[in-house]
Image (cartoon, rainbow, N blue to C red; front, side, top):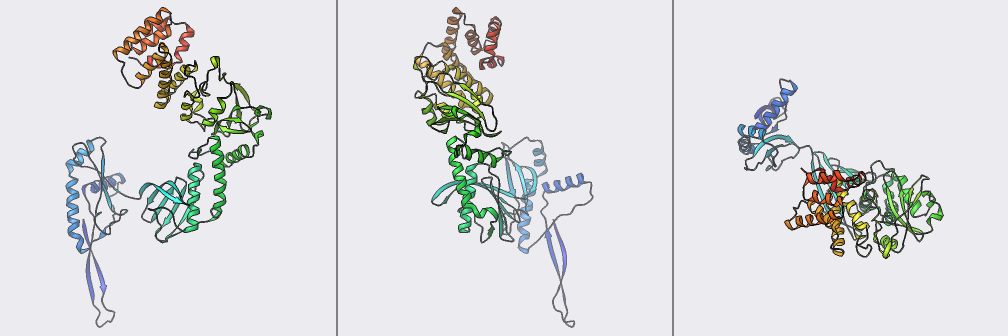
Amino acid sequence: MVTTKTKKKIAAKNPETDTTIVEQLAYYRILAPLEVRSLLSHLNSSEKKSISHDFKKLKNEDLEPLCHTFIEEVDKQQKRFIEVSEKKGSTPYKVDFVGMQKEDFNLFEGMIHVYGIPDDGIRLPVEEAKSDELKIRKNEVIYMNSESTLVTYQIIETEKGFKVVIEDTLTLDFDRGKKSGLFHLERVKSLGSYMKCLRLINYYIQRNKFPFQSLQLSGGTLNVKGHLQQIEKEIESYKELIDICTQIGISKDYIFHDKEDLPSLFNAIINIFKNKQYSLLNIHQEKLEKTEIINIELSKYVKLALVYTDGCFLNLYSEEALKITGRYSSITDVASNHGQDNVEPVMLPDNRGNYDQKVSIFASRKIKEMVKDTNFDFEIVKFSFANEHHDIQADLTITSSLDYIDFYDKTLDENYLELALDLNQRYLANDPEDDIAKVNIYFIKLKQGHELSKEEQNDLYNIKERVETNKEQTICFACEVLLKNKTKAKRIFATLTGEEKEEIMEFPIYRFYQNLE
């Protein structure tokens, strides 16, 4: 749409020679079908008889390109395409910026046309929109003090300026008109991200620029106020905190709960693990005279499993802790709620047991409880079952594997199912005649989405015949479930004693049985 406006120009101020030049100015707005539909929809919803819109001034050289643009947009937004688009479901989308070829193109003033691209490749008009902001997320390796650091940041462009959010912690608001901006440092989300932001601010204070390749201020300045001027002192204190947290297993990438009382938590960490004020744990000193596992609740959201040895605490989920705990035939597990006088020692099973067996320190711990530990590390739990730390023939091997299968059902995390499979396969390799390990392996295979081969099905029938002789009905039940004979499995289940039923209902195989058709 093009409109005109008359404008008078005064050529001379002398009354005798005063002349007035009349100039016709043209203004335009591309009203393609999508925008017309949007305008009509707005009018209908607002129950108004008119609507106002901004028009742009038309330059002489713009008329022909604008006409071509208008024809192209109308052609792409034919009525039949719009009608098809309304009937289609979800589809990949393509965005067209109208007039993007022009040198003075402004992303925040121009219109955006959104098209769906179904399988047949025909572009279907979806809607027309206007951009208020443009978000770009980047990862960049930067260098500060000869050290490389990976930093994640988001640039949010608007018509008036831009905002940069670094590591979701440090925000920079920059006004293009004033060519100035402000820093805003959020509360700690993770120690690693916070330290990166502190170092970035310090870098800017010293050099008046950022170490980014793709983020420059183009001559602008940032106002650094308040405690940020004392940044180097804060950096040192957080370095110390990170070192202590690493020792007790709180990763620098751990995301603290947004309701966490961080000053109290950080003070507790420093006082307990640096200053050794163990009285804060409400554990009598004599209980810390030998190597033992201590479960500590530092706050409502931070729970740690640690090993106390030689006067200090170590992260239980560490290779060093595995070596230490493996040297003892028994070890005490002590629960401690920080700030509460509620400590009950719990003796773990003998780590040697019969025949001088080595057993993973995690074998008797439930995985659903371990994952609640802030310092939980699955890779260390997995490594604790390696031959170096665990005798695969120990009775706890099969029991632990069932716990991991059960936890897989709750989380669908394949790592736990793969660990269970590894434990049963290694157990079977040492005892090829063990029927329970075989049944567990076939069960895991089905849970992984595989079908049992004819040979494997025959093996299950052979197992069932053997255990029937010994009246091991629970294994018979498992075999029928894996063979997907639900009716036969139901009959066997009905013959079990009340205690046997309760026991088998706790196993993952029972849920599998319930879901059989």
